[in-house]
Image 1 (cartoon, helix red, strand yellow):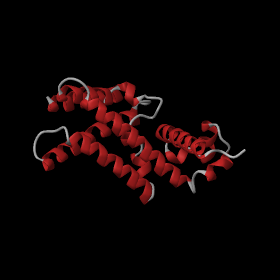
Image 2: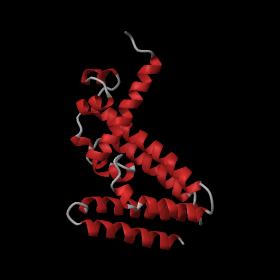
Image 3: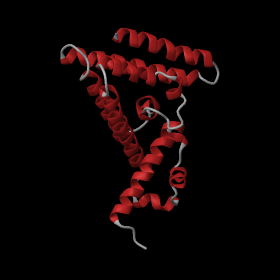
Length: 194
């Protein structure tokens, strides 16, 4: 039985979403194509009906994760109340133990940097596009001229992503340090924004 174009597109989206979650949780190198296909409910052989290579899947998974996250970020920082209050609420959530420990892998900016650094140009380009989208969202909500706002957005994004990365890296061996990294970053970054 031949699939309709619509069903094939739905299957592809499901594979990309599954891969994105698995890659964010386990790292690209630790997830085989067969694992993604099994988790998505398909056979390994069906992969090549949708993608030429694992790199193509990774590129789409990274881009898809950032598209979704940027949309949510934009909605979060623009939702209700004063802009500063909305941004601080987002930052408090981002720098929380719940985000650090999420079963979805969380934000692609803090889940994919090592994978992107070790990957080829296409995957790095998808990652860079995602970072640019975040920077535009943050800079668009900051005071000052465009150059100043972008510099502050770069510092903000670097700070929150770095705090989550470090917190995850020490969580099992030193949970108190992990919590301290998040709490201190949350306090300092939100204080600077007030």
